[in-house]
Image (cartoon, rainbow, N blue to C red; front, side):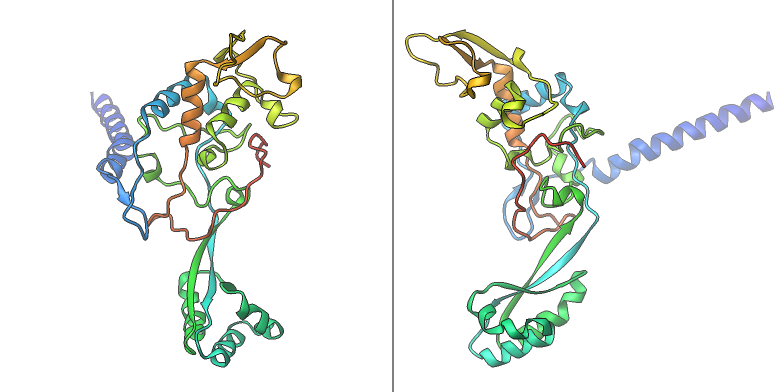
Length: 291
C-alpha cells in the first residue's frame, strides 16, 4: 500500500507540475492580454481580422498549409544606427561632432551634411548610442537612434522584427508551423496582394520558376467565357492559361484564403519587440525555401 501511495503521489505531482507549467503559467502570463498601442502611436494592435480573412484561416488550416509554412519570425539580436537628421546652424560644430563619432567620415563631411539624414555610426545597443548622440547634438545638430533587428529571417525580408505573443492575440487558432518547405508567412501580406495570392495558389510556377508548391486548382473553377469575361478571372501566362473560350475563376474558398494571406502582417513596433528601421527590401520570390 505504501508503494502504491508513493507511486500515486509521484504521478499526481508530475501531472500537476506539467499542468501548472504548460497550462496555468501561460494563462496567468498571457491569458488576460489585450490590444496595446503601437510604440509611438495611438493605433491599437493587433486589429481583429475581417470576416473573410477569418474564414480564410480555416481554409489555410484545412488544406495543410501549416505543414510547409511557418508563421514565426526569429531574431538573433539588434544593432542601433545613430542618424544625423539636421546639421543645425553651426555647421563647423556639427562637423566636429561627426568627426569625433566617426573619424572615417572626415573626407566625406561636406557631401554628407548636404544630404541628411545620414547614418553616422552603428552601435550594439541603446546604451552605447547615448555618447554619439550627445556628441552630434552638442553643436546644435539633431540626431536619432534607430533600432535594427538582426537575424536570418529578417535578412531574407520575411519580417522587420521577431514575432511575439501579442501578434497572435486575435487568432483563435495560432498556426505557428514548424517546417519551412516554403517561406515564413507571418508578414506575407506586406509582400503580396490578394490577386497575386490567387495566381500563386492556382499556378505557383507562374510566379516562381521551379516552385515545389502544389497547385491548388481544386479551389478554382474552369468555365466557358460568357457574353463578357468574368472580372474575377485570373490573368494567366499563356503556358498556364486554359484553352480558348475558357477562363479560370476562383471559388469562394480561394478568395477567402487569399484575403487571409494578404492580412498576415506582424510588423508593428511593440514594447517587447522594438523596431524603428524602414521596411527591408524583399525578394519577389515568395516561394523560395529557407536557406
